[in-house]
Length: 114
Image (tube, rainbow, N blue to C red; front, side, top):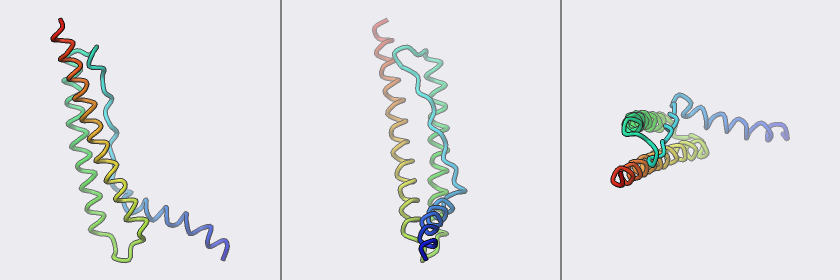
């Protein structure tokens, strides 16, 4: 029985990860320093940001599909983990957008001074 209790948490973690294992979350793009970046660097970053946002939306849709396929008796921890993954992805999208907008504002401020 004691061994079973030791194995149970590992099994729950594996089950939680399996619930959205097929969903691939993209990495956030690197942000340039707008105060020192060129317009071309910002344009390339804008393309990367748009691509990241699109890929993250695909990831969120994958999580939603996994949610729809989840059995009614799914472990609450698995559902909670999927919700946390969704919320973290949305939070990360907001951070990336703010970082990019900050870089653009810094670039515009520098360009106005020149």
